[in-house]
Length: 234
Image 1 (cartoon, one colour):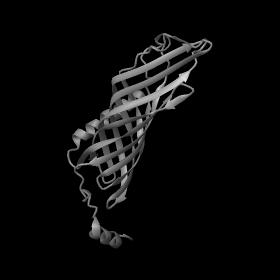
Image 2: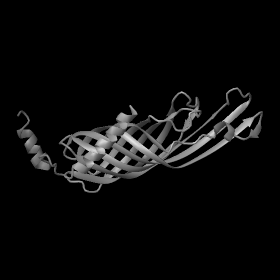
Image 3: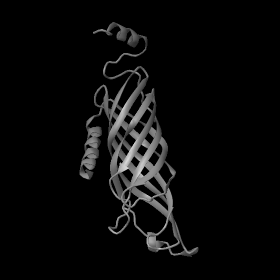
């Protein structure tokens, strides 16, 4: 599964290079809502908001299909409190802020007319950890003790998984709702707790070189309206 995700990203990146015509580009940004899953995920996780921003390239493959390549800066935040197993009257609190350079590569199927379109995205995402901060506190019998002994895990320096979602485009403006599911554990050592990201994102993008006319012959405006009426039953 993880190899399939990696190959998907490589193929979509190659498609961006091979298709030189009908290319659109822009900037984007939004908010992330972080969640965790896996055999060792916290029972009571507080889902914190983060953010993302970057730029994208949209290469048209056909009238309804395009490939999307992005480079983003992403912040994932989460925190939780729990008791330490086999340690009575203990409360461990963990707060993390993790920054990544994220590279989503997706296929987009888009339909609509004139200036309003709806689309779905599906693909893979590769990301590299550039900064992380962690605050931990551990109380046992109301006494503060060294928490690194219980939670001194090191992060994996890269992460990958699957990403998909839906969106709407109104002229040069895109609004996306996305969901990213990581397939790699946050921490690197085998004896670390095993848990992965689930990230829900709401993003807004702006396309710099938006063009009303479709490269595949779609007519817009009054001409487009007459064309649709004339070809309604053809």
